[in-house]
Picture (cartoon, rainbow, N blue to C red):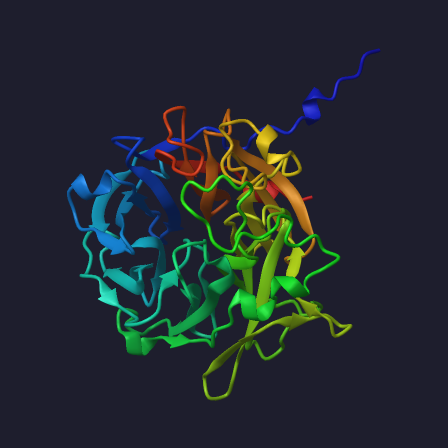
Length: 426
């Protein structure tokens, strides 16, 4: 008798998609930063931004980040994502939508942190409000956490940026907190945690026995420089915030005043996230610091499938599990010069396979599904965000097809649905 393993073959759970946005010119207008939110009414809200040399010629408001021209967009759907309608453009990027006090907000940055507000589920919007007047802010549309009657999210202030190298070592993830019933367009409503840059927290020269950094760091990139690979100094970025409510967890705080930052680890390798924690004090101030293990050793890198790229974490009250949407790496040990020409940047920068995991504790991750996969490395499915809606999980992906400029600069924002996602738990 011949036995086949075909029934057990992993197939993408949500390869089919709806195109929310398509670039009018894939070689000069790129689709970035999707984020998605399910409103109590059933309406879905999706935000994104566009960049590239063709954006200045397009209509609508735009922002400039050190010469990079960007435009944010809002889309809504009232039929579970089958069709989408464009309702607004805004002059900032890397934004995420969230609810607070019955109002809908979209918060991002364009050097400074900016926010807009809607009181009619995304149909009309306020003018952009500045929440900061100094700094050099960065982020990706990561998660939003609600606790203690407050809303929490992370933005990143770049300590030093000489624009000669990707400044991930200079990133300072900053936890922001505001009362849910406050006016979140008012800078006075927000409290910011203290800053801690990667280069201060874990200087690369002190790292050993971990293979970090995987490649020799390139302190300054030069245009046209032939040195390969070019790897920026070890750092962290694109930070989520989680809270451990299970009293059995080693890092649980019974007072509910500790929040953990889970960030993309830029190391040249794969499979790890970089972490820190923020502790709230009686006076309301918040201090950012490194976590420690029971042995007293500091903890910076923790297991995280896809932690080398932007990922998204959500906690599901129904299953008491953390869900992780991330990029799946399959060949980070292939020499860069032997990778397919369509592959982007370093070997750990594979961008065309989205995966889903679940965990009780954010350390031990169980594979749940391959969400979607492009047919070639150019056809990316990456930098995705997700939202729960009843039994379904919605995914907004930064995507590309055969017309895309490359795996990084895609031409599509796509919407995917993982049906009955909790049935994936085992």
